Length: 96
Length: 255
Image (cartoon, rainbow over all chains, first blue to last red; front, top):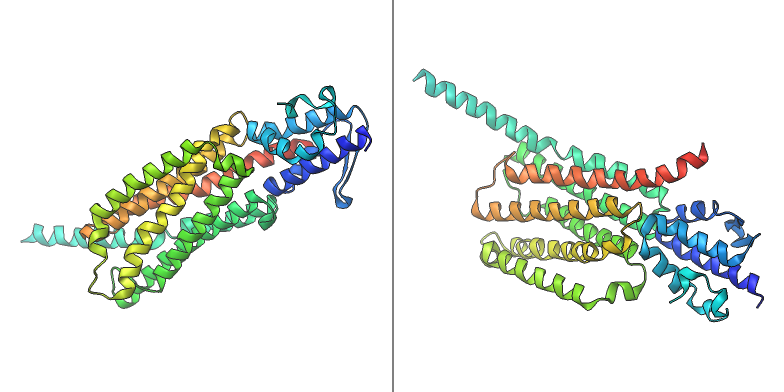
């Protein structure tokens, strides 16, 4: 899988898990992340800039609401994808 | 002689006022539930953890309001000061179960990953210890009297069901309270803390009511009613507070 696609899959998984927790607010939050276009009706997203930064910013936007709990749930949601990236490609918030 | 008549008249007046207050404060949980149900939609209704929590807490408020209404009707129509056990008790029990389900979903909002619920084990131990101590007070405070009741089997069932089922929502709220610091720094930390503390206040109200009922010291518009008024108001206000945070996040962007 291409690196850009991995980041997009990560974004989809993070939004989906946050949607299960807070409902439509999760999509609202995601739609305001720079360089991220969300078409949630088709469950697709488009990253325009650097994927690593976009994933970081997305998690940061949820952290604004629920603190570290949001980081934990995001980590858990993308655990199956993180190992597909090299250490330096993994967003800092998902590391450790 | 005149002043005795005056006092008894004023006491009668006061009793009327007290009964009126007890009859009327059901409006608070009912209004709270209507608001809560409306706000639940903003969180995706039953499709999200937060929406479910809102919906079940709202149903609990609604059930409390209806239960109070039924008790009031028994008092006004049949002259029964405490219509126990009655259909009202089934409604109150539904409310307690709904509070427990609401507390569970609030716990899932705070700790969405299963390992966050399970760990650390010390949280379970704290809750278990707190519940054991509380059960000791409940048992020795009044429950030991309730397992035998001249009014029949249904009374015994409710005598046991009320204090034990209330411990379920309390233990879930305590567990959530121990874990809520993981959301510290987030905008929803304080509103959720406020809702959890309001639920603890509801438990205090429930405990005081049961104790006073057993001791036959309960009176209309007394400390028990005051605690219930505070608890219902606090729960309703907390639901509004949580949604106000959501609104503050979305509104500036929409404008």
